[in-house]
Amino acid sequence: MGRHRASTMFEIGNTLLEARARRNLDIPSCEAGTKIRAKYLRAMEEEQFEVLPSPTYVRGFLRTYGEFLGLDGSLLVDEYESRFARPEDRIGDHRPRAHPGRSSGRVGPPPRKRRGRRTEAQLLWLAIGGVMGIALLVWLGAGNGSSSTPQLATGLPPGPVTPSSQDPTLATPERPQPIKVQLIGIGAYGSYVDVRQGSASGRQVFTGLIAPAARQTFTTMSSIWLLSSNPTGLQVNVDGKVSTLPTNQTTFLVTKSGVKTAPST
Image 1: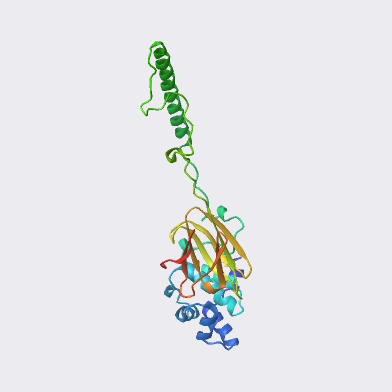
Image 2: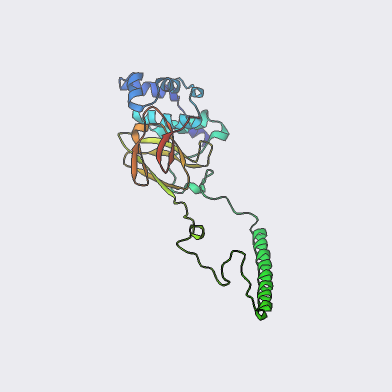
């Protein structure tokens, strides 16, 4: 298996440069077609990947630039992973996963801990409440023989109290509604995206290419952080309202009110 891998190794920079030459394209034309800055395109062709902001940008830009030149973007990313990426930066397969929750960056609540102690505490409070309730019933029963009926401190008559629609203090608070966010690939190339919960340092929800006409749907109670390697190839639908991304930014924060730019990392 090692010999097979060695035989398939290639230079990423030369591969990109030769593909661009075959298509008679210059750097400004590729910048206009991919929406990737010229200095990043040159850095990839010279294999100076440290010039790019982060490994996430490298993967997204390699895939977008390679597919723009008619290459297999996945092979370019795999070659970068095997030769340049640090072990802590490798994320394995970069294609969209059917069940992202099963990967190392899984989405979903962390495992519950100390459930037994919580149950014991709840039972203890229920027991204390039962004892206090019995004591209150005994006290009320002892007072039935007197001429006056005990009144509650609030001035309300004794007996069950039911919530009143006219009293706002007794109304049940409304639960926050989840936000449904859908990313839609458009144009000729779509967009490679990195989606995280809340901020750039939040849990990774999804990473991969959203091809033209493809869709990825997410549900959040607050917001999601979005990196797009090609903003012109992506639309964002927030609770049925579709927004087009600004072309001069690559990172965005999606909330219930819509999409706004976020500082890049």
